[in-house]
Length: 137
Image (cartoon, rainbow, N blue to C red; front, side, top):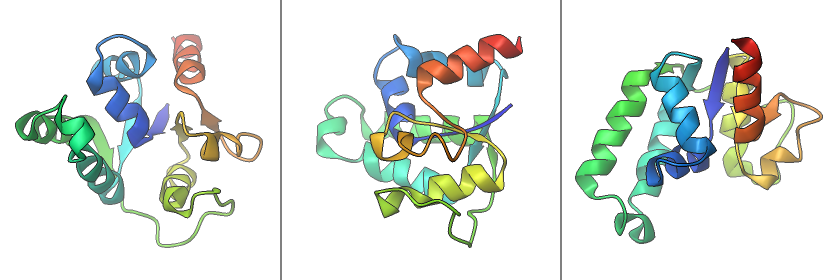
């Protein structure tokens, strides 16, 4: 099973060892699914981890180590050049849709702007994704 995990879930998972985002990171570490990453996703992760409100919780060194961890545990895919067939209310998220569509992967997110597209695309909340992983076992 493949998944593009939105940056909001990746950050939640590193901020707290408890909760569903952290469970997703452990499942990735344990090889339970293929984490699809791209340069755009890694750039957004790096940019977001540099926000002052997050710097209070994650040092520059920890952020760099985490980005390396994501890169090491993910399967790198080229960012699609075409726009997705369905667009988000937030155009900055369209790259995630395009990546998930291109790689035939679930998009795992907590972003309401993306979750409203669940009828059109395989978009799951962290809870739904963990349930799907459990069914696959």
